[in-house]
Length: 494
Image (tube, rainbow, N blue to C red; front, side, top):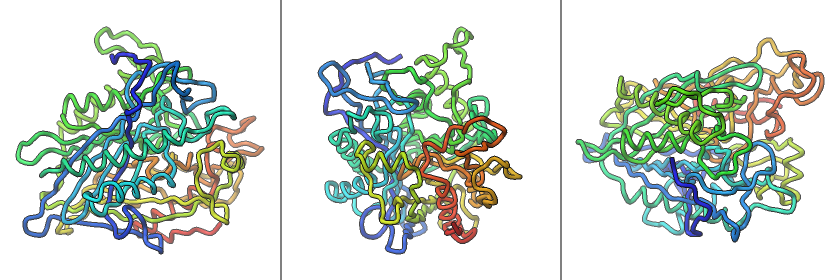
């Protein structure tokens, strides 16, 4: 187990980013809201190259440091020590002129406005990288600092200096990953792990899939990275925890690095609903005894169990990408209505970390699809990765929206959104959640339920709506994905 530390050096920093090529500013969409970047190794002499890097941004914790309020659950948790470092883990993939960086950030979430600033910082401070598009995701750890403001007291605001440090760490991680790129090859695997997930909201819908992407050095060279995506809230340490930690992704990454080498990256999947480790009992692999929930040891066992299952699936039947691999990113800028009065009041007062609200009361955000296929393009994609700007409910990904609609739901007659994964192509279709933004919960509009009478005969609302931008988030996000994937018009009627 890691050593507990009460003081962290001020120089520590990090962030999570996903990088992709586009014209103009790194990661920016065109005026139409569309951006596409692609590259393949079909040209003579072009090959896939990859590099990975890690930066640490753990906040200083101690009697002489600024208090650090921990995000997630309720208010009232100030950090007392550091269990494990918070990191920014960047993976850059480049082929045929396209450069794509995936970076994982150990935070509860990061707003789109700061994602744009990171892209600008890469452009300004690291011109050697060239033009790149950047997608930034958060692991959604509930044991990291409050960088949003929802969990801090009224007399304490998010620290701008810490946010700036995160942005710089992200840019540095991307630049180092770029500098370390070398010939590489990709392979994929997936496995269902339903026993590690509990759904705390009706209707009970669980996406049990863990996705693994391995990035190996070509011709037997040293491993570069392993990416793992899984849909379960990183909140295994529980609501009384006061230790800074990446939660179970910390343990999963360590085991990935031990068993497969290179840099381990973790992305949360479609964990809305909400899918959680809470209620999952873990046993000590050595003694067989049941571990106490909410402890670092139980959290470690959870992360290691997940990683072992994914590693075993990869070893049993990894699917290699073609040697002439092609990468393509297709993104869309979107405007999401901000209907949550609590969020609006927090932004107006400055309690919630600043982000721009449009004249129509909407927030700028974006969605993207990363496609991995052969350069020849005649066999279709091997994988498509969906970059979702929030905590999407699994029924919006795999299907299972309540039907017929519960009579207690608020928006009667709301048409169900078309699920994301059936619109996608390829053998592997994972979600990378909290990418480019944290819009909160993305809830099926027909399941929206914050006013009486409540669904399922309940006496009060279920958890979710209080931490969502509003009922139009789902149709807006799913409509944009449908536009990218050619499934239906992107702008449903309101």
